[in-house]
Length: 214
Image (cartoon, rainbow, N blue to C red; front, top):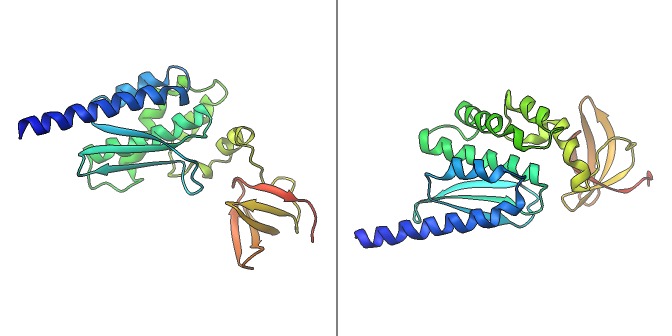
């Protein structure tokens, strides 16, 4: 039994080391230091994922392997990749210390805040103030922060609702929509295929496909 457990422990450490070696090329300069520091005590698998429309990162605990698992989308700019990775590491830390805590409750907010502030100098200088501002009250999804979304928008080739007029068409998650009207801070849009109407946040990442009202 001891030998079996010892083998499992060494195997997980091997996965951890290999993941970090692969991970470095996706991170900002000097960010790996913090990743190693935060994760060193834990058996973990870190995976570079395909592009997922529904999420940028993911955390879970694998009870059979007895290890933590984190994945982050491969196509994120380095600062955003590290920002998302820190989000998921905060989930890991909360699960270890507060197993019954809510997913994005106060324990997670505190953990994420501490990680962001500890590593803030790793980010690009013009992004650091946005990180500090976001850390005052971290949200489950940074898309509620227009400043952060707009910061990364040129790097992800995404567009925004700025400049769109009623009747203009755009794509969101491989579906085509038509802008109907602005309602306070959100935009009422119709799915061209289904006819159903949806409210979009102003910071949603969209792709403009036509500038006519037909």
